[in-house]
Image (cartoon, rainbow, N blue to C red; front, side):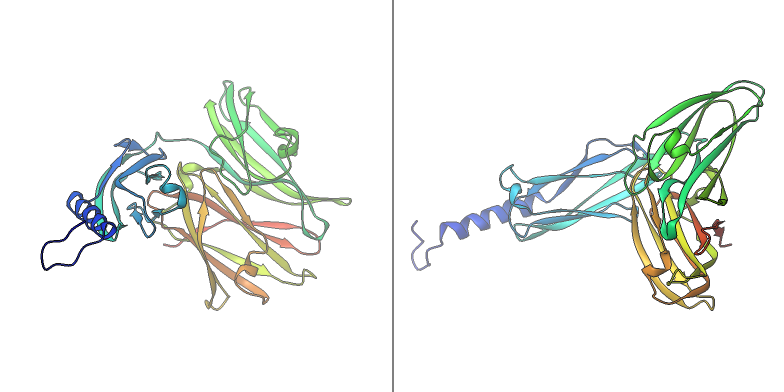
Length: 356
């Protein structure tokens, strides 16, 4: 191309960059949800315009609930006309300002949109936070029996859902049962005998008709008998909420496994969206030993941390304490600790206590 008299020629590639940047700056950035308002737990697709198309481009998202996301540049962005969508689900009701900001073709861009999230219907679900059909440390063999009692005089119908350890469980395997009025029923070795599965799992109870009382016992099966702990069912209404801080106390850990105890800690997500949980470990004098988090809990996920103090220390711990909380707005979860005798496999359940 030719330049004006007295001015240097401008390469076509440079001129194209100026034109793209100018158009982008004038157009700004928009963020559009595919649905709004939504109920908690609904996955929303957010679309940006313009899209991420070139190396160095990126747009980050603050969802207003304590979590973030990003649309980064990747090689496939250029093949499909740009990368321009991201998904998110909010855990609880509220009005959330979603802020998107970043750089496109070297220009700083930003935009926002207000998401209105409504609550889900009140649930009467119950959670057995830990169950097992699994072999553990020091030759332990963990099994779980469940007891169900129909407290009314009419027939009850209920569903058990298996939430296997270490992954999302948005549509878990379920089994449905009926129970006559006033009757009780035991389901021995429930993970294996009811669900024909192995491993660790939480179990969710949904009462379709009637009103139930539920409890369980998880135990180490030995040749001499069993050593076990009662694990009650926790109503979803008693889940730990985002505004609460709880603590697990009376925890012990001996690294050698020769005598003394070890502590396992379990977490179960009880809300309809992904959340994060933070743990802080303390010794008996209140000295912090270390923090773990954010721990990601997917929908319906059960995570267990065996010998949990080894995440923060190599030392023996007596009378330790763990602080737990979620910073995800609307997030809810249940938690427990098992303090296990290293010699016999005898376990004691520790439930969280709310910090007043």
